[in-house]
Length: 428
Image 1: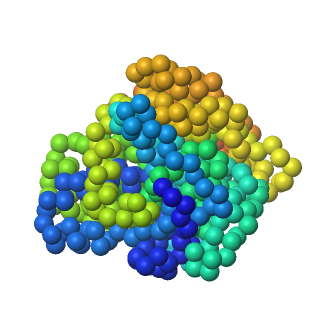
Image 2: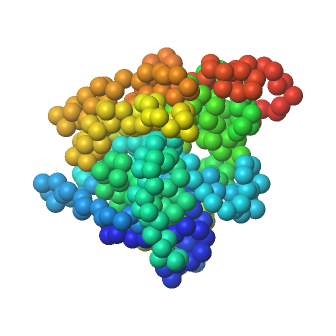
């Protein structure tokens, strides 16, 4: 949890090979089977352990305070799960989008594991939040890149994951103990390894950008279809990044339940395929740079009841500054401070005592509301059609709400579906 420097690119910089910057929020929960594989033999252990790459944790010019222990001397754990849009390998480039060097933090999810390990909170941080980026050090040259501002938090990854950690810490005041990243190809391979993830959409949807095309109802997403769902930015909610985050929560809830379902974690072949795909695509900080470290964290996460895992989106409002460059972007809403403080204070959002009630009140104070320019203000938990809560892993994942806004060249994603009958569906 000390102050570390980040890595900007695939080059080695701390004596240990590291993976390319990237990640998806499901990386954290895919560590669950690693504990079970520790007894599979030295060869398997060494192979999986050798897959993992590391990069330093923190590159900001300041530092992080140590975690506050509870009365029993236990500390919470905060893990930042970073998703990168980099496509600098053949496998990632083939999936689509811009190819070449460079990366942005496409997804940022802060996972808070309570000190007593009885509950967890997953806080999504919109990639389009505007803030003053902290100064960060380039580990290859030792050059300090001075802080810039205003800028989008997604751009912090240009200076490595340690800079994204520093940016999230500066934004929230929360100490980040670890980070995890996973690449696009890894998402495809892991969804294949578990036999697909079952999700629901409440209407026909087609997003020409991500290429996701699904009929209304339930589908099992594997491989590229899973990635299309996770990347869809113009298909859900109000057609913005906030709608995508709600859909990602639906996917993650379903993924957690699939991992914990009978048969998924008891099949050695499935376990090996899943762990191999996860570790090959994983970049972590030095504190998690080994199969044993990941397995220990996975075991603690696996002890948290699914009905005590709460998914939230950082309260936000449309940008109201003078720079037209950020006209479509977001800033923190005043209610965000209460949410950050609740997490800093190790308060549960899932019920079970006065601290949980305090945390829940912080969320209720920031009711979701819409705004112009495709932006909005959002927090969670939110409610899906039919009253199900898709953001609570203990309940049915519910249906992702398809956008009715004109967010594609064909109008709404529903209209785009009707106007493109020749485009094949992503999944049956």
